[in-house]
Structure formats: C-alpha cells, structure tokens
Image 1 (tube, rainbow, N blue to C red):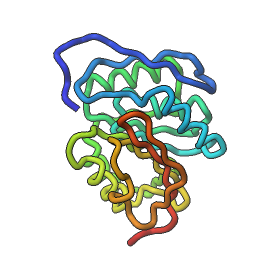
Image 2 (image 1 turned 60 degrees about the horizontal axis):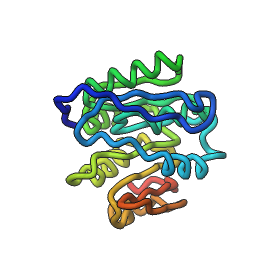
Image 3 (image 1 turned 135 degrees about the vertical axis):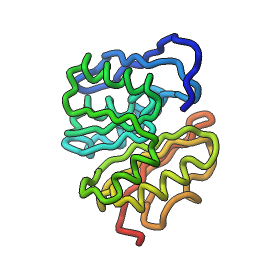
Image 4 (image 1 turned 180 degrees about the vertical axis):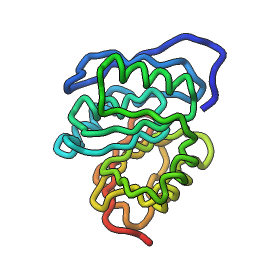
Length: 197
C-alpha cells in the first residue's frame, strides 16, 4: 500500500470480546480501507464457534481491524503482515495499548513473507485475506497461500474483494461456507478441505 502525504489518523472500534469498544487508530494511507463494522460483525457471527484458541494470519493487515477483533474474541495468536511501515507502527502501538500479547506484527510485503514461510512448519487455522482491490493481488495471494502450505486442513479463509465472483479465483479444495454482498464489496468464508496438490 502506498503512503499518503497526509498525517491524519483514523480509527475503528472493536465490536465485541475482551477489547469491546476499544479504539484502534491507524494512519490515512492510500488503499487502506478497514473492513466495515457491519461486515466485521457478520463475519465474526459466522466465526462465533471457530475463533477461540485459533492461530490466525491477518495478511495485508492494514489497520489490523480483523486481527484485533479475532484477538478480542479469544484467538490464541494473530500474526499481522503489512508492508507499510506507518501502518505497522500503528498496529504495534495498538498491540501495546491493548496489551494484546498474542499479537505479532511483521513489516513485510505479503508475497515475500509467504515465500519465506513456505518451508515453515507453522500452520494457520484462520486466515484473513483482504488485499488491495486493484490488480491481481487476490488471485496471486490465494495461489501463494496454497503453495506455502500455511493453511491447516479444515481451517478457514476469509476473503474480501470487489463485488465480483470469488469462486473463479479459488482452488478446488476451498469450499464456500458463507458469502454475502455489502454495497460494492463481496465477502466470504471458505473451508480448506484437503491439499489440492
């Protein structure tokens, strides 16, 4: 994501859980658009029985709103991946402010990070995938995620994108659990059934 010249800060509030109503501050950056409150509320209603104790990855973290919502609701670990240093600093500040010790932030390009982790034994049970809408970023990220072997069988992937068909971009072993439209945004939750390799 490209950094804007403005230094204005924005904020969102955590909806529920341990950090309910706590404010997350983040910088105004081009392309940074936190998941809207009503979408987050719908998503975490879907995840109600799946979040506690889960290891999560917030790829293209931006404001970190999805990852912090997961931490608030009992995730055991959230790794935030974000390439913009201003956004990373904000996530780090919010981790400190909330004393969210289960959150870790990494200043990396998402694709470089996935390449580095390809041989790692760590696997995630829940991945938030909300990349910039422009270009082929989502399709590339899905391919990289699958090939890096970071997704646990039976795990879940959340995808947020512009209102077009999500299914065309998905590996055959990613099965839709739920999906919905909100304005110009389409979002969905997918279950990883088995290795597609």
